[in-house]
Amino acid sequence: MSRRIALVVNPTSGRGRGARIAPAVRERLAAAGLTVDVHTTTCAEDVGKIAAEVVASGADAVTLIGGDGTIHLGAQVLANSGMPFGVIPAGTGNDFARGIGVPLKDPAAAADLVVAGRTRTIDLAVAKDEFITTVVAGGFDSLVNKRANAMSWPKGSSRYTVATLAELRTFTPLEYVVTVDDEVIETKAMLVAVGTGPTYGGGLQICAGAVIDDGLLDVTIIQPVSRLTLLQLFPKLSKGTHVGHPAVRTLRGRLVRIESPGITAYGDGEVLGPLPVDIGIAPGALTVFA
Image (cartoon, rainbow, N blue to C red; front, side, top):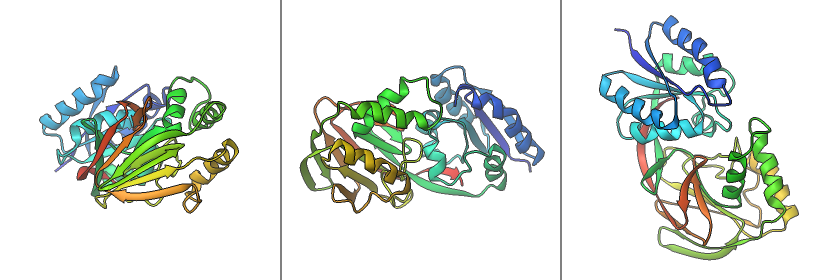
């Protein structure tokens, strides 16, 4: 029996990449014998509405063409639904797709994962009543995220590099209280990041070594360093080699609280709200083609 796939397209993802690759993805799925229903979003709020309609429709799976922000919205509905979820990356960072091993620059190969039909369950973080598919950021990184979201140039992950350099000019360490399960840490730091997977910001392995189905949150604290040292650390984040640096502290737990006055938390690159934020773990909450 043919599987019925709902293909949800965010045409604005990646400054139009979502719209450009959608026809080829649809053809790839249909050529493999899948029945494909295409849903095109017209605004961010559409993603959740369409996902809810897909879950109720009796479709066998949903596949989303978009970036981390679009996936974040879809996950709010698809979490704990049991419906398999495919991703065709078309955004700026694509960290969720990277974390589950989806090809980032080959839409046909990403579609082939849906055709193959192999699934796994992965964990999601939960913060401020939202499911988070990648990382919660609070500190220098969230300020970079805010700046990058407001920029129209450059395209792709280079935008985060430019935003980092711009933010670095005026940044000073912040006062934090970080609670990981029962351990309370009072410290100054440059940033605190909490993730189920390893990367954010277009491939920065801030939570290097994080496993997306181990039932744990990975916490990274970068304690005060000079601006030059922080700048030197960022290339290491791309490879995960920052772990072991004297200023980098890593922890794991099931419940994390971050407190720092005046700082806004971001999750999946989207605004969550002002700190403090409590972050929990929802083990096995999302079923993905991977």
